[in-house]
Image 1 (cartoon, rainbow, N blue to C red):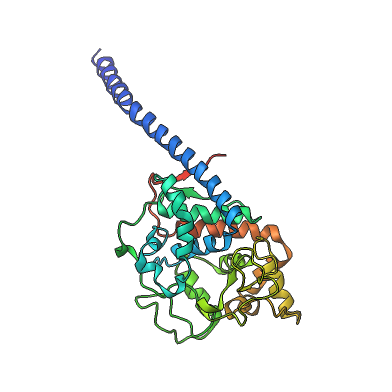
Image 2 (image 1 turned 90 degrees about the vertical axis):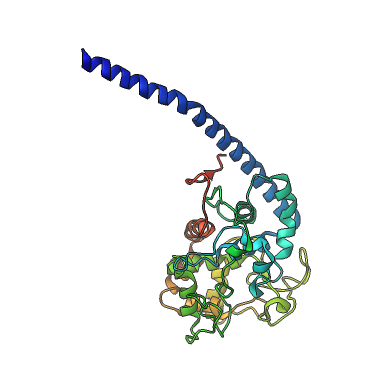
Length: 323
């Protein structure tokens, strides 16, 4: 009767809509597959670059400084590729990061469909992996900022020593009235949505890399017995003896120093030492010194979260590399 006729025409209408949708869905699927293939090849090339140039530390630093200026209250900063603009690269805390962008330039040329924001975060994930650390559960598809209008105010990145910047609010570059290293770390990281365990886990990335006297003025030495022969550029002070290996050495060194076994050739800032001194940070620091796997699990999750701060993804759910 009339009911079956109207329901069959309704079904025909649905079928017609489905058939019209299918080609677009297939095209979208193809595009995602192509994007995933390009991302996979780019990731492998990032790993090769890190191995060849021993550049894991500066790639991690680049990625962190790119997304670590996110402010969830102000609604700006984060992983949007804005560090490629001179305006942001000229921020004092970003000294030396131009060389990291130069290392990535040939890859950006080779993989033009991979955004700057994705490439920067991908290189950091590849660096952690190549250095012996955990696989970061990262997704891709970040959309790049179109201009340097996206560059946030200077002063949001963490300081190593007092005087500490306010690091949050409308004037992050002003000196804070609170001289506490623990309060400074919490201001910086709670602004991005991290808790105490995240702060300690992310600090553990200091297990790789060096700090240079001429850049920050903080290290007491120009070179040490662990850095005077490189690899790469000689000099600087490292937080750990094997500063190209990602493990839990950073926490072990902090615990040793607190027990009077300090190594004068290793670097330590107030914001490092406070991880053992503060009652909120200390339990996590001791746990990570004892249990590398616990550190790796906490670090991988926090690094992935950090890499997405402020990002807009296209497609909205992002793209994961399938291996």
